[in-house]
Length: 334
Image (cartoon, rainbow, N blue to C red):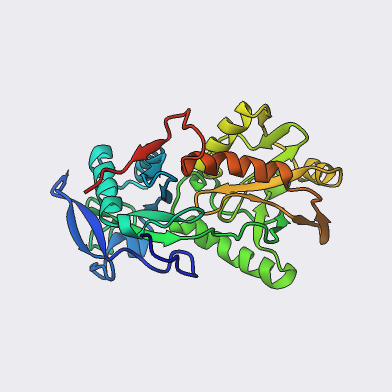
């Protein structure tokens, strides 16, 4: 029987975590340790020069009781890319996947029933204990994975107000596709001020009017039967959920347009009945309820299409619809 889901997203972790260490030029065998603490030298490269990246994905308890992980290979590939761009040792894909599957198998009793899930947070950090290596990548590293039972990051049906920000950028443009803490930290002040001044839930970063992403999610405009989202560049995160949504939406009959679009186009569409959504692992698909553009709040009258797309994704995750895409990896029973 699955346990109750904690009230605060990502606040409770399975008691163990797998740890893979890169040392002496090779990845060492996985070891298991308690997840309530982590030992690092004070001079660790990641603490001083930001050589760290992470992933977010979920395991689901399906209707028949089977436990699956949603698209783990895609998240592993993205972390490998992040590691390369941060000059970190690149994790071995098979060892990574095996450790993740074993973690979920050990925590199987804690994987909640629908509509909740088990959130997985793999984290890769540079561990060289040398503060003189500001211009050199870390030659040693640690990869660990946390498992946390969670509900929705954004409660389904709750308001989702976005402040459209055209002056500030979320992060350094060439680093946008790296899922690292520095990118979230660079957006944090803007997000906090938006919450204080506009009661906004998130900020949609649109430097020079170019619609990109929010501080924590990818963004898409649903204008009639067309879904419009920025094409993949180095400027923003290449979301696994974003990719899943676009593939499912195309099969639902939507025209998918990966192209640049402006705040002016976004505003005109919003004022004429368009919908908008945020996509990401934690929230899956969150329909946007209003946009604040140049101090004016534009209420989006419908969230129907976004809600339907969300259901199409979650039905696959919970085993209520066929996995035609081969996205689900079953967790072996122990």
